[in-house]
Length: 296
Ligand code: NAD
Image (cartoon, rainbow, N blue to C red; front, top):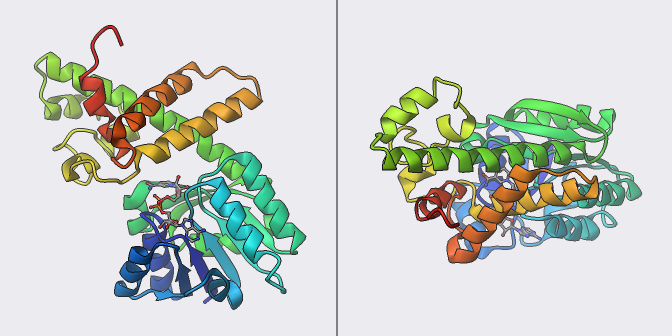
């Protein structure tokens, strides 16, 4: 049993923290949002009033925050405060530069640290079946692994500091591109008189098979748990997908690699988010794609 502080109890963080409690860990949560604090208490989670109180007696500190700037601000606040060695695990999806900065802040305070972004969505977070992509020293990974196992079914050590984020950025570029491809196929199928179920039955067992189709189908019906059946309530918000696609484009630019499909996906999600759909699930982009004529 570990004493764990869990910072950021949103769509992902809350179910992840609850799985740690289920596994027998002593978890203290913290989130800036008052409604989230109330919800967490209702779900039986111990909540601290301040960040400092949450981390004070924790041996492990997990962050699950929206962006790099949030992670750095939390690390800036806690790293100098904590005297003895702690294990810091950042599960947020952030850029590699900020991930390296977080490792740097942790090592300055003599703490172990792992960047451990996840794949598997809110369904995976609830079921405890996430994939964790970890970057960090072998010693930090070895300590983090049994804790992550309470929240995921696949824990991969990708390499040194920052490589977990690199893997996540590449994975989500595949996801953004493949979701658009699946949406375009359903939109075209509709125009051609093909039922959603027929296209699903064929493509899910053919060469078009992919996660965006089989686990997260963007039309209601074929996959009952997908956000399309819940009025495109996230799930994984379009704003977060845009964030990840921008991260992949920044990373590609930094190494001077052209990723034209990733670039196109970023442009389409930018258009979707600017049209007021930031808070919708990212699969709702099918509604915009249906409305596009040949000129767009
Ligand atoms: P979310 O917006 O639902 O939750 C983030 C939470 O962090 C919010 O409750 C917010 O109040 C809190 N927060 C922000 N700044 C804080 C601070 N300084 N201190 C304490 N709390 C703070 O986001 P999410 O969907 O849970 O995603 C979290 C991260 O996980 C993101 O980086 C996202 O890209 C990544 N991710 C999300 C999914 C998904 O399906 N939602 C899947 C994989 C990865």
